[in-house]
Amino acid sequence: MSTDEPSDNRRTFLTGATCALFAAGAAGVAVPYARSWNPSVRAKAAGAPITVDLSKISDGSMVVEEWRGRPIYIIKRTQKMLDSISALTTELRNPNSEDEQQPDYAKNDVRSIKPEVLVIEGICTHLGCTPKFRPGKDQGDFTGFFCPCHGSKFDFAGRVYKGVPAPTNLKVPPHYFADDNTLIVGADSEETA
Ligand code: FES
Image (cartoon, rainbow, N blue to C red; front, top):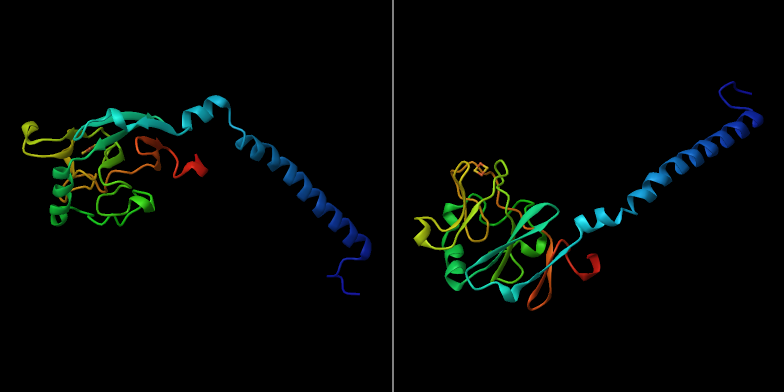
């Protein structure tokens, strides 16, 4: 018999030891795994989707909500704002949203499910300041979102301009519409909420 091959007794021992180790490993892993799927009520509430009543937002204005500690901008865009989005393509760094800054359902010309409702995170993609909403020319030459920290500019779809420090478009969080006037932020659909 080759010395490389274990005897029956040794084979039995090795098999048993391997099973025991696997069982011990599985038991060791099972506890934190189970814990990770049973977050505390508080943790769950902190990450839970939020509901936004869209009927309270007037055309052309923005409200700010909070989800997972991040400011979420919800804007009811006017037709004029939407027209300005399509006119800007050559001035933008990533007009077609070719990065991972939005869910698939917001990877379109206006970066939204409904053209008139934009949902984005109010966190500048340069160093994390809060961009200001500039809906009209009365607030300066620029309209869209302007980050005062280092001058990054984004259009009314949250797409970043060329030649500014921010590298990417503003992020679109997961969201869906429960009905015409009810927006849910933090889940892609009722099934995942
Ligand atoms: Fe916005 Fe730097 S953090 S431009």
